[in-house]
Image 1: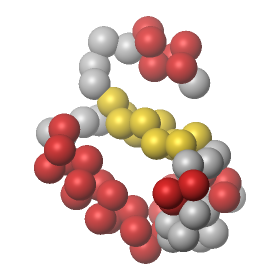
Image 2 (image 1 turned 90 degrees about the vertical axis):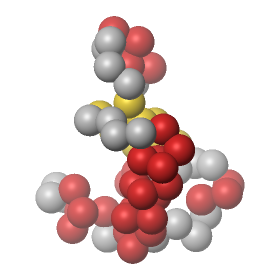
Image 3 (image 1 turned 45 degrees about the vertical axis):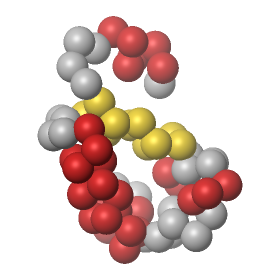
Length: 65
């Protein structure tokens, strides 16, 4: 994932869900996360989520299973 990110010229968002601070993160928290990212860093087009499989219900959000 880091290799792909390093080749891009545009800014992106990266979040690793292995971070212990995100232990209770749920699919319902994504909107708040998105709003915080935009407030802190501005609008971006690309999101990278590492270990997202640990988030229950992520399939609904991402449209994948």
